[in-house]
Amino acid sequence: MRVSLYSDEQAASVEAARQVAALVRRKPAAVLGLATGGTPLALYKELIRQHGQEGLDFSGCTTFNLDEYAGLAPSHPMSYHHYMRENFFEGVNLPAERTNIPDGLAEDIPAHCADYEAKIHSAGGVDLQILGLGSDGHIGFNEPTSSLGSRTRFQTLTENTRTDNARYFASLEEVPRHAITMGIATILEAREIILLAFGAAKAAAVASMIEGPLAAMVPASALQLHPAVRVFLDEGAASLLTKKDYYRYLQQQCAGQ
Ligand code: GLP
Image 1 (cartoon, rainbow, N blue to C red):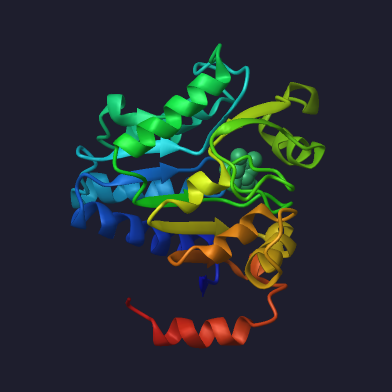
Image 2 (image 1 turned 60 degrees about the vertical axis):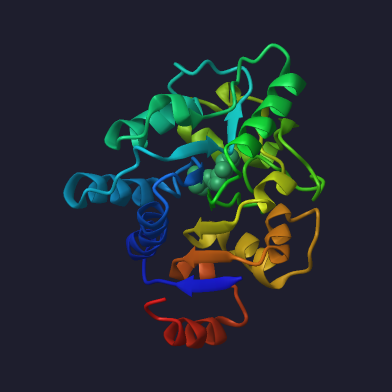
């Protein structure tokens, strides 16, 4: 994993956006894997800015979101469909028919999940997957003890995740108990992965992901198996890393790459 440390969330997000934008310029038909949550908001803002001010063109791109709450309609204000419209899709020129998000209201969930996997495959696979990180080390909605070989599927959320995400809902009771999420094996098939994590609440998960053993209890540790992962951290999220000086040294050596 290539670990990059920044003074704050904004600086890290601008750098991460630069990597996404470079791909889109190099490969106008890029397939992007998208994430939700508070973490990628500044990254999406910067991509929208580059679209508006620098002509960054998404018209040839296809996108696949990681996950969606089961039981929430796309119109629900807390659905990830709604989040994506509000925070990214409305600000760029992605063709709506090439944006894909799991359907939280799918009647036959296993068939929907198989279809989602098939769609990713027929689009040529994900070129670059954007990830956030749960405070318990989850990626997408792959909760601790998820199979490292898991594919897109129905997943029961832990109380930890429901409590973390309650800040986006009116009350904990309203947070769904289930989700549809790409699996860990699905995520690992992306050609490049960028993961962003900000704030001290993510520090333990970040340290386990980067420096801990590969473990089903820390789904993000599966990223250790991937050859092209870049991690963007602020000071708080990096605070429990033991090899911080080494990452800083490498970062200086790789500056501009
Ligand atoms: C949610 C999402 C994840 C996200 C994580 C962190 O559960 N399913 O994709 O990375 O929580 O969220 P936040 O960025 O709001 O801290």
